[in-house]
Amino acid sequence: MTLAIYYIVFASLILFVFNSLTNRLCIEKNIPDERQVNVFRWINIMITILLLSSYVDVLYAS
Image 1 (cartoon, rainbow, N blue to C red):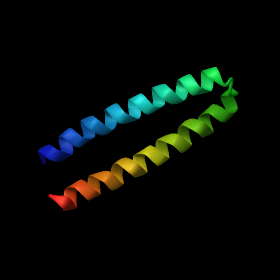
Image 2: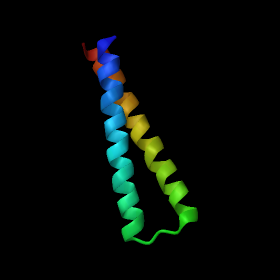
Image 3: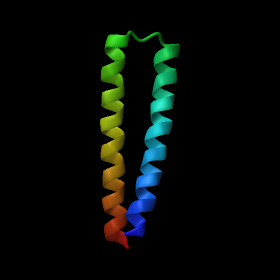
């Protein structure tokens, strides 16, 4: 159970960092607001899939 709590904190930190980087990318590349929603959605979905798959991998490895 403690592994899940640590992993949730880790995943939240990773999502925050990637959203910050995505925001910086959108600002530097002057991406329109209409497209920014799709960019954030796409990146958040992909990062969430990666985090879930790595959690399952760690869960079954131990």
